[in-house]
Image (cartoon, rainbow, N blue to C red; front, side):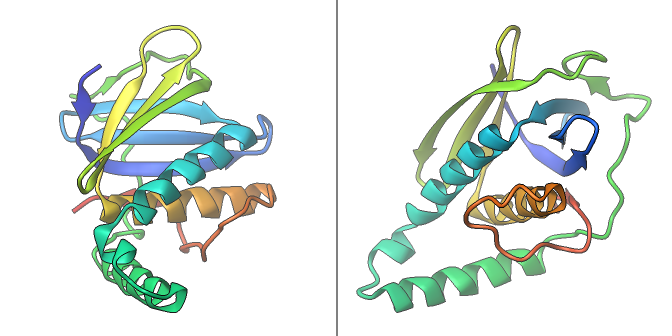
Length: 172
């Protein structure tokens, strides 16, 4: 499984499935689509939080208040570069749907943190998955997307920051 550079991501709650459709467009014109359950989404958020908590700028702070202030500043800065207004690009002529027309259910999460980068593997029960390289700015946006979709689903997940107006995101 090679790592994919993210160009755009979307989280869309689908009430009929009671699941979130997670779509990622990669820089090399592939689209990855996976269904996320409530439980899987909770685990996803935990991993994203672990990545954010591993930030050395936070670990050197002496008080919880200082850590929170630094984290808030960094999140605000990351959100300034985010584009939540651009519509998610459906399959383009020259793009490929990586898993075919059937959208698999995300089953397994693998991750490792190396420096600033979270290497996140998302796999279905059978077949190939996708590995994403996520920096802390993308993590902030992804957390917001998950939070917005979970709030729309009324899933009452822990650690849900405020949600953006839209639930798709373009990586600049």
